[in-house]
Image (cartoon, rainbow over all chains, first blue to last red; front, side, top):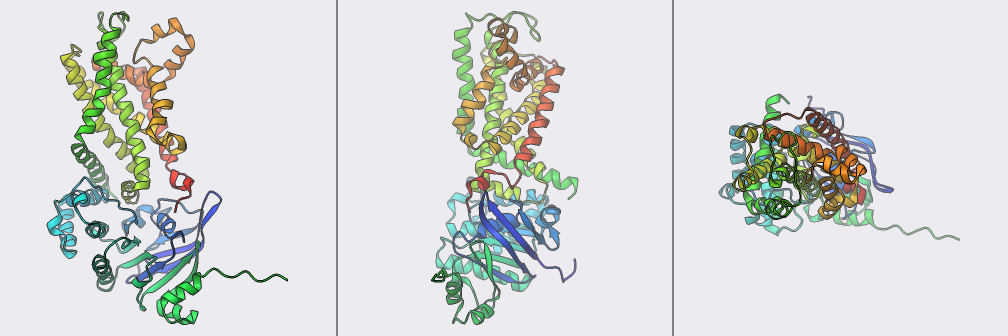
Length: 251
Length: 267
């Protein structure tokens, strides 16, 4: 793999639920070390896009490549590089933190000694080591999210995608999670796609992809999008770009 | 990915199912009530009215409780198989199946492993049932208790695959009540579980023919013969072919572009 290979390449991706279109020719890319925010209102198609990137659905047209591996034709190689945190909780509530983590590592074929080492490392990085033997249902919402992030990192992926990971969390939990994943991008060159509708999570130095009604309407550095849209900040730019357009008056 | 990765993955899926079983012991025993009610009440009531002549694999006249036991083992496998596969469809939308399906190994392997994990738990249930039935004078030769294990495994896998396929293509059958009415009950009653096929023939040729083609009949006969240390080759072939067909259809039915989530148009 060369350093020129993009972490994620989404190319002309389209998908529909029956006759209802969900994504229309969506294209963008993410490079190693990028913190990319996928910004979109509820129903913009963010979760559908995640389902396509993770191979839960197959695209009707277009392609998804992870470090050059097509998700449809080389799914094993592609998914090995990918860490995912879905919007809905995907932990087993009746099992302990440790049991959930070891189940995940087994799915990736990691041996138990290495799996335990990795669990210890990642749990301590997010301050969760003392909860290792607690059942998931005993944890707070913020702690559950952090366990999901720990789990997504256990197999040392080079691309991580998170779908609205901070929704419903208190401010401190949100900050902790954001700081942690931003650090991963800076220090470990992890490529990261962060889907959200919470605009205050975007920094001027982030890359931003704005998804609106299943289409990419802006793609670039946050500062660039602000300048191009002639607005003061990314919030205003987002509002301007996603505002319903008035129909031209007919004579 | 090397064979050792597949093995670890398979082990992890089995272990998770076992841990979940330990957490849900009450559900495990509750589902034993159904076959035990059939054994203690239904079979006791029918003992007097329903005579069973000497038919293979039995070498002598038998009590009705003895006859009905393989059918009730089949019932345990059938209910569990359907429940496992339906919970997989539910899980796909609610969460934990996403973890499974986004892991790197091929989907056919992941789905088959998950079905196998469910079968192991249902085998445990069957063994507990056999232990209780032993105190009820339903005794098989010691060798039979060992020989029945692969028969239980194969039949459980067949029902799990059938359930997975049905639930992936028929939306109305996603809830368990629908499956009970349209799949489990017809399969169970139109089979050799409660009465031998020759007896059925006396009252209805059509019903006999339906039962003769019913995969559940062959699962029950496979279990019945195995429990007495014998191999029913025809039933084994029938169940093996059905398992392969249902499994192939289930994996096809689980195609990501088809599932229930896509049909609902949720986002």
